[in-house]
Length: 121
Length: 121
View 1 (tube, rainbow over the protein chains, first blue to last red):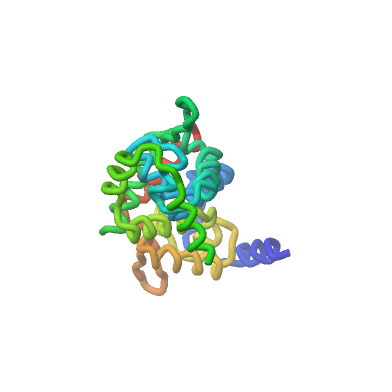
View 2: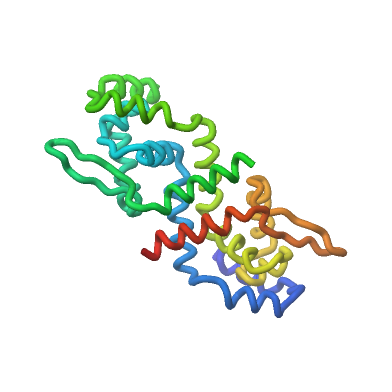
């Protein structure tokens, strides 16, 4: 119902530059891709997950060392690692009885560095 | 109370590699910076804001053209533009009676492109 109202309101909007709107519309990526992009940034939008990722920039680590570093419980860290794994941001490998987590992707560090540049400007 | 429990739990955690944890601890940025970084990504973690930003990659636009493009009400778009402005992601200039919004920052496009690379991998 709310969506219908939004939609009706939009069609009532006067367009200032119809040609421009059409040109931009052609260039917009698929709705679904932009939704997935928002979901990825939602995963980054949590300071515990940010701290876990930052720690993994420095070294591969096991859950209990991450828990110790961040002064949090292992279960809290495990929960966030699951979220990160579901978004393909971290991967793990076993070494004896210990599971080591590492970053899955070179993009993440660059994204974080650019984010840092923005907030420090 | 919950925080106390978390903290107590963490101090009980066995550390596998104490030297490594110490080394990583030294390299972690300030807590406050990492918090601000999470807040920045929270702003990106909304598909309407993502679509507004993507539109502004293509052209500076006024509220009513953005509203028409995204098929949303002007008030919904204005609200999200305020959020983006508070995070210094968009700026605006007046031209006659019309206010045009543009991106404030070259980092944003690069961050989005890297995010797209991650989700399309």
